[in-house]
Image 1 (cartoon, rainbow, N blue to C red):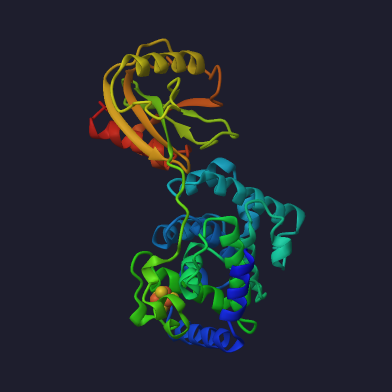
Image 2 (cartoon, rainbow, N blue to C red):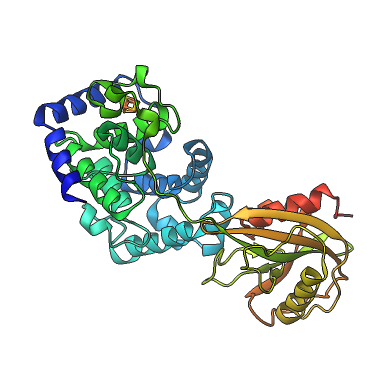
Length: 389
Ligand code: SF4
């Protein structure tokens, strides 16, 4: 944080202003907050599970996953003992699969090395796979009442507006400033409610775009509200544009309507998930790499991948169309082709993939094959154009 930012931060938040904020926030939260399943029967396991699931995913999407996970794995020991493929299959659709792998790895640490008991402080929780400063503080404050501040996307927006802070929140100095402010404001008496109230305020009142200031419990201490400029915050530094990349995939169906899927290696993007086999198109990291059309480069790349990776020598058939998917820094256009195959035409993977198998296309969701959202899009495309017999 710059000296100027530090100075204005120190003077702007007098003890009285901090106390007013804490009181108003607590009163509002206790008067009626959203009923969320992880706010009942609070335990470190439930809080941890919900916090990992809610990272980069909306609460409404998470709720059914949360229930399914708890029903399948009622305790952290049950989760640790589960087969990774089963855990990934239950996670399928939530995206960001590294979160799921880390979740499983952390469960094993807690179950196998800590006797099934979560560490009792934010500092110790940080040692678990996939647990960063925010998640550690959320678990420690909500489950153990530790005075530890949280800073997620919702809280960042609220703090930036409360402070009318011009330092971009997505830069190192901006982030340090926000952590310092969050630590200053967190209630010493009830950090659990305070942190949940801050997150709730960002989710339901101080929303992206135009916040609902007339309903806001802390408008009296909000600098952006006083200046009439809430929609100017948070200030963000523009990110680099996502790089366009191109890939190809084959929807390979046999005479019985079964589809061939292959399992990706563990140490790559979407590791361990099953997909319609294929791969990148050479030179596909170029900005104008094309994609979204049936051309010789796409067919040649797919023929080569199928041959090298699975020993399939059949040429791609009809072009089915393209699906697009945005990863954090890449925008993938995947051209999808049909491939008619006879039973038994696949073999063990020769390279890249770790397994290949035929699946009943009409019951894929219930089978032992976790799919990425990208692969679901490919299957939806194939279904739309009625690839299945
Ligand atoms: Fe956000 Fe408006 Fe409340 Fe300020 S007054 S914290 S801008 S909702």
